[in-house]
Image (cartoon, rainbow, N blue to C red):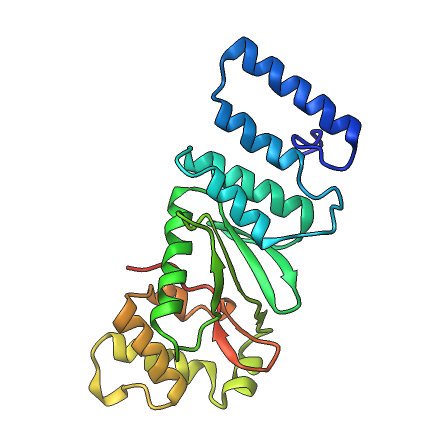
Length: 231
């Protein structure tokens, strides 16, 4: 916090100075030229800080392929923080608003990358599940994913309005199904679809029955938007 931007991109003088410093470091410390090229690409990124491009973010990740995962994470988060508004932060990921209907989730560490990868895989393999869909992900590693943007629910009343059932009954039916109680199997379509997610894809139960992980899409659909933790 409070430190100067490591990758200036809005001034030609700053870009020139950055190149000079980078070349000096290369000469004195023999840093790998591929890393220098990668950083210079960030220096040459859009001079308009309001412009964000998933294509450019993808290119940065591809160019960093084979480098330290920590370096790729730092580059992605730096680019996102310079171009987008951060709207959330969890233990595993930083979340940025791409638009009114899309968000960018950037992993914080190696374990968080696995969470992104899990969300991307589940989104692809469960097309009818009540989840926020992953639109795009970085390759070859899922350092970041772009997903549908869901507005978090304000509470149990909002859940009941969106789903037609109380949160308590929904949670109880999911817990009962997980515990193998046939007498209390999921009876609503939402509960059944959610149980299928847990059963088929190994979702972590505490994540699923945390109301803070549920929200509504712009069209009003109720979805689970934080579901990358798997057992």
